[in-house]
Structures are given as C-alpha cells and as structure tokens.
Length: 243
Image (cartoon, rainbow, N blue to C red; front, side, top):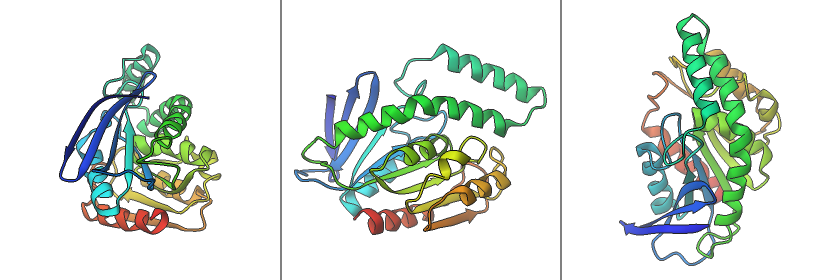
C-alpha cells in the first residue's frame, strides 16, 4: 500500500492510496492512533470512490461513530483504466436493450463478471488497511447499493471479517447463490418505483439472504432516490453491530 496524499478537515483525516493497480481512499478520525471498526463502501455504477454519496456517508461514519472507512474505484471507474472486455460488453448490452431486451438480466450478468475481479481486490484492501495502527483488525462492515450491491453480495458472502452489511437497489438474478451464504445482519434498501431493478427481483434477493436478522427498508421513488433519512438508520445499524 502506497499513500499518495493526506488532508484533514472537520475532524476527518483523508488518505489517498494505491494498492497495486487499485486506487483507494481511507478516512479516519483526525489524530486516531488505535484500532477501530472499519466500513468498506462500494460505489454505484458510473461513480467512483469519492462520489458525493459515498463521501457524505463516510464522513458521518467517521465523525459520529469513530469508524474508519475505505473505498476504492472498481474496474473502469474513477481512476481505473478502461477494460476492453468490459467496454465491449457494455456496448453490446446497450444495443440489446435498444432492441427490446430487458435491462435487469444484462446488468446482473455484467456485475457477476466484474465481481470475480473485485472480490479478491477488496479482500486484499482489507488485509492492507487493517495492518495500519490507526485502523487495526477490528470488526468490519460493508455498505453498497446498486453496483455496490451486485459486487457486495458475493464479497460479503466470501469475507468472514464482515459482521454486518447494508445492501440494496440490486436484484436476485446474479446473486441468489451468494445471498444464501450470507448470515450476518443485513439492512436492505428497496426503491418501490425502481426503473433499473424490478421490484420483484429486489424482494427476491432480500428473501434469498440467509441472515436471521435482516430488515427491509422500502421507500417510494426511483432507483437513485433513496431518502436522506436512511443514512440515519445506517448509522444506528452499524453503531449497533460494529461499535
């Protein structure tokens, strides 16, 4: 892990880093020197590690809960280079949608492909970050919706360090098998009028989770219209399970 910049503001220390070819960012309380819970955040499609929603949530996790938060750019996003195979598939999928095919199965197939790369990358990031004195090997949580859900479900299923997860805006098509291996507490977000992920598939993904403690938060609105008050619930959820 190589740190390339560091800034501090309003009690939050931000460190940009690279781990091999993976660009990432770590937020911790300013002046932190001991171990603390860590939340890995997965950004949405077309976004990046410092997208406004990721940044806003990360800063609140740090300032209100004392957590560390890490986020990285997934392949072809943010500071990552383009991947010819992924670009080709995206172009083909767009043409298939324009020809009348359903969008959800195409998204699911693409996310399953990318997850095969991101799951080992994210586990390597956890390994590296938890070796830092101001993070340490404390409990880990995961937050990710939309693309962050499609990649997050197989990650949470594969990573025993994760003790709790916030997921949502994702469907069951690519994730049913992995969801059946998730047993940690989950808070799951559904937008009732989601135009990208059919409601029935989101509900099926929630149902597929093997967690004995799981809560469904369904709100009216389209894919990107999660109400601001859901952040307050997320803070309480992670504070309860990681704090």
